[in-house]
Image 1 (cartoon, rainbow, N blue to C red):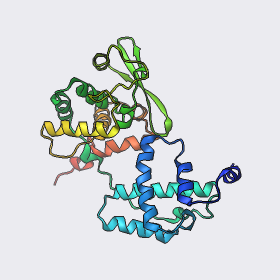
Image 2 (cartoon, rainbow, N blue to C red; image 1 turned 120 degrees about the vertical axis):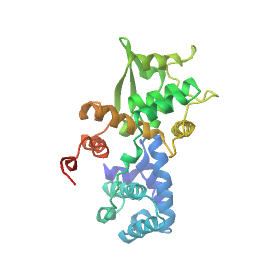
Image 3 (cartoon, helix red, strand yellow; image 1 turned 90 degrees about the horizontal axis):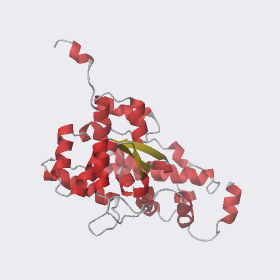
Length: 289
């Protein structure tokens, strides 16, 4: 397979221009939108080196630059992981002789999810405080299903199915994995209430005032504006609704496996961090100071 791939590739031209499109092929547009700026930044940082000439020292110096710029550990980790992914793919396909990314010691991520969990009352306030019915429905769907902004943006009317008095939405998540999520009766009826009479099955559920499909960035900005409207003093994104869904569902007794399946987590370990972020108990409560 790698040999066949190499034979089909043009021998002339810049390695970055040849390899990156092949590496990105088949990935969701939202993923490509996150990866491309990182690769562009790293490419400019190591210029005029080609992909196969990148050394461990280049990766370490890039990491130091990001650290000196006081970027968050999660941001630095994401950027380095993106570059490492390109290098690993290129090596696996036989396009470069070594995968130097394997030798890079990745920075530890300080999980700050606990600081991004709003109370149920705050989320209800965000939803009720938006004056636009369509926005209220979108906010409620984000919270009750835990779907990502990109998944909400891609939702089409044909992805909705009735299940008795309730409903179900089918979303395309990370890695092109499909999952179905149930919606309670009231939420299902509200979602159906915003459907235009002339809406076609392939058309997007959430659109702008001009009728264009909402972009994930538009949805995140909408959530941020709704939070500001009710006086929440921090910058809230659409992902905070997902954090709230997971945390509140677990607190209400939802099984971890069910929450993980709803959110599309590959491993329950990812879901468990919500328990650590908002523990119900602590051994310290059994001690006397």
